[in-house]
Length: 287
Ligand code: SAM
Image (cartoon, protein in one colour):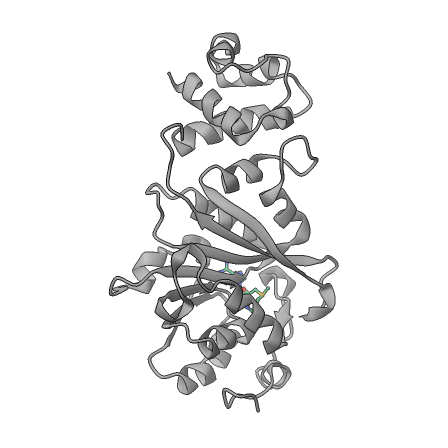
């Protein structure tokens, strides 16, 4: 038994016969010290303490992260899980923390999170999850492209494959720099909190993972509309090796006038532009 009075994760996995399904991106964590570290890394992020916050978790699985969140005092956890076997396993945690854990069955990509969370009583919401790798990027894009900004959540603490984490935090002129870097950074602060080795998971994936922390920041006067920025960035990186004067033709408007208006050299390539450059370019394109 652990300090929460619940059995070790390996027992839970074997009792509920949670043999991992690849199709659901199932690589389970079993070390509550590690998940405690992940939970505590979200403490104070976005100016909000875990104890005051409601946590939205995707894919609680057997519950290593869910238990750590509750042990570290999360006010309430709302989780969405696709695998009914894991929902059964979660019932033991619900019994140990009455009224603190709601688990819904379904596909997180299709969920209206705010609907599931319901009345927050004015509390902040943190999204904290060890995401299934097959839908991790799609979920991140869903959360970063919400129409209202500041968004409905105060921070994101998410597990990704290390390679995806590096793309989120990448700087211009690096190999990893691309659409995800700009989407992640143009109105949020991003950082990799730590790496998580493959051996921490059951079964072990082939790659190293990492925990990424993302804190939304207020839009600046120069921030373009997200969908316009996305369109320009897509065209620029879709032909990454080409000069912007060529790659941006895909947008259907002659690129030179708005490249000039944004003060960007037409012979530059996408990876040379900073986020501020892309913001100026998107604004000039829009006008
Ligand atoms: N949080 C657990 C942990 O750390 O051990 C499990 C993490 S495992 C990487 C991903 C979990 O997400 C699995 O339990 C899987 O069933 C669930 N899952 C996969 N796709 C999902 C989806 N689209 N919506 C909700 N849950 C999903």
